[in-house]
Length: 76
Picture 1 (cartoon, rainbow, N blue to C red):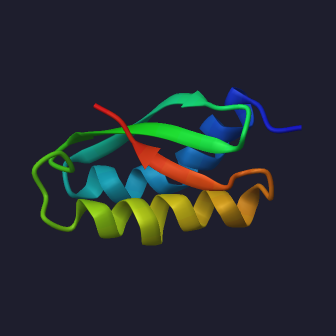
Picture 2 (cartoon, rainbow, N blue to C red; picture 1 turned 45 degrees about the vertical axis):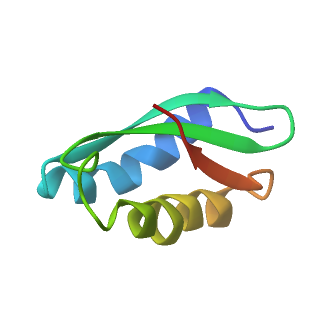
């Protein structure tokens, strides 16, 4: 079963790469239909590559680790 705690553990695997460039990610919530809402922080907010980071980095990592994750969305 997918929980906030297991998602946080998975995000802790990607977080160091974001922090190297002055960014970070915060888990906001997990919806019942498998959508993970995250908030990009730090330099990720204004980075022109943030969508690629969200899709190719964060979303891919979470979807590979958890079959229940259908999509990752950025919220403000």
